[in-house]
Amino acid sequence: MNELLDILKDLKPGVDFENEKNLIDDRILDSLDVMNLTVELNDEFDIEITPLDILPENFQSIETIYQLITRLQEDN
Amino acid sequence: MKNILEFLEQSSQKYFTKIAFSDDKNEITYGQCVENAQRIGTNLSSLQIRRQPIAVMMDKNVESLTAFFGVVYSGNFYVVIDIHMPDDRIQSIFETLHPIALITEKQYEHKAQNLHPQVFIYENMIPTEINHQKLNEIRNQMIDTDPLYALFTSGSTGVPKGAVVSHRNVMNYASWFKETFDIHEDTQFGSQTPFYFSMSVSDVFSTIMAGASLHILPKKLFSFPVKLIEYMNEKQVNTIYWVPSALGIIANMKVLDYIKLNDVQKVLFAGEVMPTKHLNYWKKHLPHALYANLFGPTETTDICTYYIVDREFEDDEVLPIGKACQNCDVFLLDEKNQEVIDDREGELCVRGSFLALGYYNNPEKTQEVFVQNPLNQAYPEIIYRTGDLVKYNERGELIYITRKDFQIKHMGYRIELGEIEAAVYALSKIQSCAVIYDEKEDKIILIYSGKITDQEIMEGISHKLPQYMYPNKMIQLKVMPLNQNGKIDRKWLKNHYHEEEK
Image 1 (cartoon, each protein chain N blue to C red):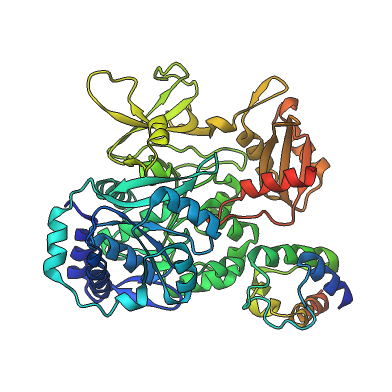
Image 2 (cartoon, rainbow over the protein chains, first blue to last red):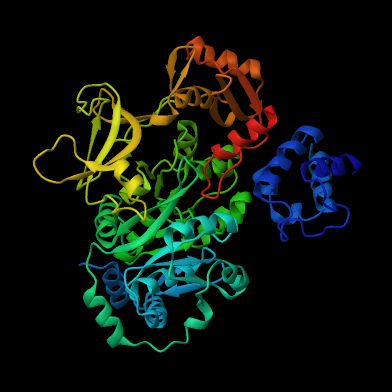
């Protein structure tokens, strides 16, 4: 979780990622951010996020992103 | 026919209850669209002014389309302003344009009032009672060479220029588009490009001519492509006309490996060079669709040449831009203003009724590029000099080379940056790339995304490019930045690169 937090803070400094629950709906993360993040997460966590998982609900908060990573790691 | 509204009214008579336009919140029938546009037109006619610009600053939705037609009913022409554009830039457009009014939605009232003294709110205009007599009077005085809209593009000097396009331009152009790509009453467009971008003119006006339907695709869905495909399937979209970068998102993420795009039969693209690799991905998944590469500037309404893909292309081959559209003529001029008829390169020049009227309130810029045909001394004939270098291939098809001002001299060699891009794109691990030139340092900079190392790139292109075309610097990005139109944002890349260098 801490590693993820660091990645997010690097991506968008100044955002309260611990408490934000609507990163997509509130447009805190835009389309470019989501794509950047996807590439980064694939590299850092050695997973493959497919288009089927690139859904708004998976990127709304740090928790949902973490759940996505954990699920994909377990699938591996 | 002399007025674009006649097409809208004709379709409304034939398809009164059919959906003309939809977005993710609303949809509007042809009947409702005409009615609401007439209400807006009646309301605006209180201004008692004709043939003047009225700015429309709204989201990309069915209401904004209705407002455009409303402006035309009032005898004036519309200018689309991007709601997300910084106020400074809007002001700079207004300094050239002097719009007589600004139309917006309730939610942007505050922003609008800071920009213009005469603001009209869409929601407040809709209850207006239609004054048919007044609208008829206005229509009777309109002619087909009157402006329909002005479209602002960023000039190389940073001062925005507004190309003024007439009813006649759009009627001629959109008729070609409709005939060539067989746009008919069952066409369901999936619209990607913003209304302040000339490509949208093709979708919108061929739709009303054919009595088709146009579905505005929500921009945010392009970040969640599976949702985008689901949305398109739900709307039964069968025709798309997108920028290549938008098609590239689907190809790079291999979206069609995971979900089927059910109804699309026509895939048209323009606005930037289409990487052949991305085209081949689409062809693999939609083998029976029609693919066409369209080419042209805002100054020729949207397009002047086109190529319908009729053969296979390798990933490193370049797609032609084809031949001139029907009722449009193109030719090449060399540096001495002589016509090029062999395989040498020359500047693409256009003549015919797709040509815009000129730049609004900017005679200097207009005279630079809308010029007397140097091949004709006998009578006045204006051509448009595109500033694009092209040449004919051995099949007699036009090939795009580069912008005249993009051609660089590096170590004494003349180089087309696009050629380097094509070689890099052909590498299988490359997702996206752009080559920029640092004049000060005389350096070629390659910016790319994809899981590939600099060494692999150099090795890959060494078979294709001479050494003097090798990039001097390579920058890897996770994802390429795209501008508001969805194209690779070269301006951002260049500015960002220069800032990094400092």
